[in-house]
Image (cartoon, rainbow, N blue to C red; front, side):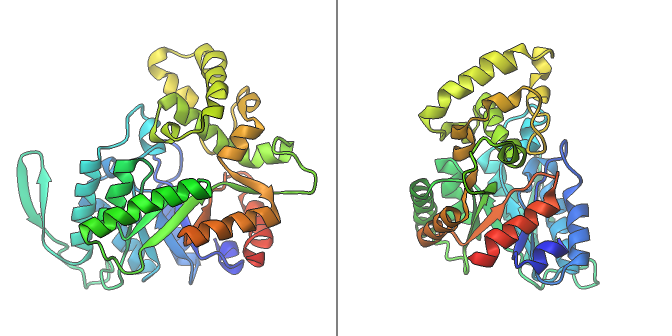
Length: 339
């Protein structure tokens, strides 16, 4: 991440998906120790992975290593849940997780519930160098569906948005802002971050070139996985992609040589990391275009500026593992340096 910091990137985010990647807080610790300015965020923590006191304790520990550079992003979970064949956590559970984390991070006593038990808890030694509660840790809510968007506005210090077109983004941020106003949420410096895979097309390069597929394919394939899961991601897909999904479902997933009760394990294999053999034929120009920001440099910068005018404050580029350093350098050179 020192490369990203040197290139002018202002934040770095990490997935909390226990069946796919390294431990999120161990990774964040390494980044905290080897950087000086870049902000470090969870993108996103899933409430069911840990009880709320552990979430608060873990992020406050990172805050001790990188004072004032930490953001707690929380959501209902996609990869962290679907990899285990489970649906997203309920919004009420997300709300409760945020309630407890926020109180603990403020140094307050808070009522913690475990089943039918209710107990008051607090951090016992906040000033002994174990954790940092002095520097504020904002809590951003990842949201896409209408109810989740409203919750982000109601209780969040920020909103984490999926890749979207300008008009869709305007509509969604309108829901967030309206909910914040109704709830009297006047969080200072309310942040809006969009997560998107991005690729700068070379002159004459097609959306389905081998280079684009290698860079954007692992992220775009997630859209097909989401369709199969009928997740909130799928609910907002354009109708033009439905026929592609139906082919993927009937020609690819239905023919996977795996028991039906474990099919999700095969569908999600390679999720955001690599494209499984056979999946590439469903990564059409329409899919790449809808689920990534792939265009010539000037078009990408213009799109980012339009999103910024609509209320987006930050864009986080999602990058697969393979060639990550080169991808960071390319985006820094082609986008950050010219923006």
